[in-house]
Amino acid sequence: MIRLPIKKLKSGMIIAQSIYNRRGASYLVKGQPITKEYIDRLAKIGIPQVAVTSTNPNFKLQPPEDVVQEKTRIRAIETVYTAYKSVTESGRLDAAALQSVSDGLILDLIERRENLVQLTDIRMHDTYTFAHSVNVAILSAMIGLHSNFSQQDLQLLTLGAMLHDIGKIDTPTDLLNKASRLNDAEYATIKQHPGNGALRIMEMKDQIPKASVLASVAAEHHEHIDGNGYPRGLKEKEIHRFAKIVAIADVYDALTSERPYKRAYTPNVAYNIMVNVTQGQFDPVLLQRFFNNVALYPVGTVLKTIYGYAIVSHCEFGQTQTPTIIAFADLEGHRLKEPRKIDLASTAEGSRAIEIVISDSELRHFIHELDLDPSMYLLEDNASA
Image (cartoon, rainbow, N blue to C red; front, side, top):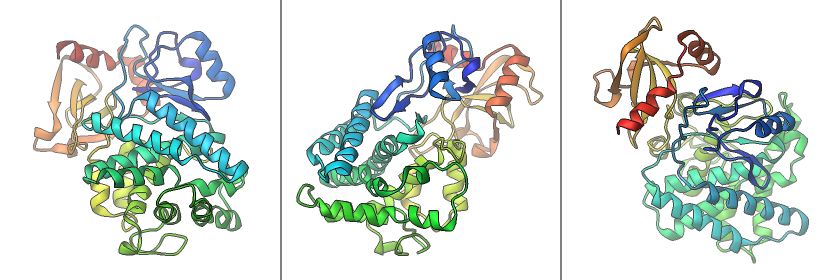
């Protein structure tokens, strides 16, 4: 997988990430071949770059399967959009519609529970909240599933995650999309959204089952285990168990998403931030459970390792720090005569074998210098499997 500027896209390349507008993936859905018409449209709507599975249009390499089906995700985004719009305009919420899409997400996760979270999507800045809410619901339900939650608790958790940012409908859009640093007054306004969300939910308690639980999720998803969160500075057991889960999903999705004020972090960088930099913010057991199911080095990632340059070919639940790789060049960047497949989980070095993730700009230069796209080794590997 490599992110390319729009001007470097070629017809026939396979897109590796979906691009969502407010009603779902109506721009491009991952796995589709790109056409000149799509390229022109992406340039017109201002998308700067997209990820493709290969720079060679002849390599029809499909991205790895998601944890939920694309049609399920699209339906969920549209439903959340409609729900938020209805709350804004009339103060009414179609809880049955949200519950229906929540059930669909859970069913997909149960059927695909062996799949890892592999890739992120692209969202238009002015409609970020809707796709973000769905992603947070998916990631939260995933944690709940691996925590052996009951069906009822899974449904409540997923619905709470979908509504966790409902308070942002009361936040000025220009603040949510501001590209520069927020001043103290602006940040104070942003920090009102958990409380506003809880109030909104309780105002609709006659329309929503277990409204008090969902309100707790909205109110507490920015609280920290060590008490340094907001709005109330709650600690550990004072925070609702669903809110602890949604907090993890919320931050991970925010870190790995493109925003007006920052580039998207890669999953391994998000892992380092959440595990090492923000110690005390998250429940450590839930955090580990979450990252057991997230590909820190998604399939198609090119790495520099102690064995040379390699591309990630496979990763498994619980071993996300030690994927299987295919080494294709030595430490000096010279192409090997024969590629070497290495399961890092079975080596003495393990995750220490990985030195760096090759950036997209470095990878483009590497492909030009070697006159090969490492994705060819994934095609060969799939063919021999």
